[in-house]
Length: 473
Image (cartoon, rainbow, N blue to C red; front, side, top):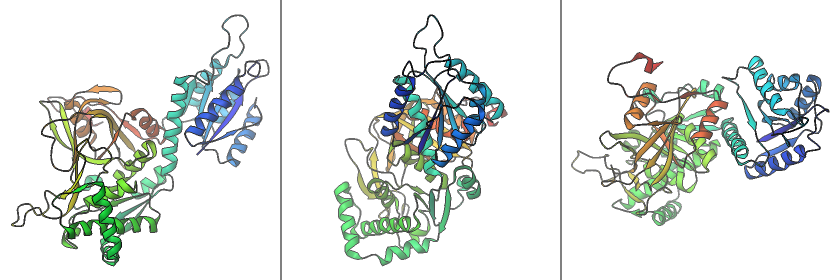
């Protein structure tokens, strides 16, 4: 990603005298270096629309992704209007006055105000927003606000051209996770390619036995094998290696895989532990049940945190205790396990109710360590976003077998929420039942990401004791 800085001021104001340009470039340079963003500083200082068009043309030649117009001193409105009317994602920045008595030295906050009000006239800010910034270059608040923008835009850029491989299609009857691949491509630039399940099973069968054995050894060193047969661990390793081959051959950033029921018939396994291993060892997002938007959500998580998150169900709301169990029986990396660590176990439900019982289909079994988390989902053909923060709170018993943790202390879009409100919000918004959980609070940058990509931000809906059609608007 590349940021383009355009500096603007009339000659009757004094950004050079007060070191505005040098301080701004130094601060931006350090921030861009830290966030792995390239910085282009346009050499000239435009003072009218024609000169601004020249600056924009130079930014196009430089493949700039985001333009930051710095009002170092008072700037004529046609400079801001020309930037706002362009195709670029953009922001406007002003710095505080160096002195607050005597003759005004910069008067650039007025220009910031002008630029933002002019932008509303020439740009649909609901679909193509512009961000504003006011603060000294070294201000922590300013740095944090700019950092949020860079991270959000990097996440958006990482999706443009990203390829997702779908293996086996959508799980049967999971209609809520259907997605328009054409709409996804138009909104985010994400490509979706399909593969038959037989390609996976064929690749699994063709793998060299020594390579499979070596992979099992590595898996056993990462987590205890508890009750899973050697044959099932070998099938798990084969599934992981075959899925990795598909991802590399297709240059896929993520996979969405239908983990049931076909693989239980042939070759007789469940790939949950294989998903875990690929996410833990290779940082490759794998969305279970063919959930394409779940894979997209995982890609955003990886861009913002550096690690794949946990694709989970909202499984059990304990309304009396105010705690929510987030859980899944397949997939999820190992890194968030508490002090008890993780195990490879047999899937608790495959074979359940039969004479043999649940004796095959390896998954990971772990409980999340306590701490702050963010839970979010891209929804509605990538046209909407829902996010909330919470706190993982240890609880005994710890919940159903698999990847899990009990959550409390919820906040939705900056608003405190009871568990009842969380349930009401999920139901009213009709959210697909997979959510991605990541450690830490990244709600702000996620909201900014959703805003730059013109998604509807789905907010808090209160629990009611009656039907209210307004909850669904």
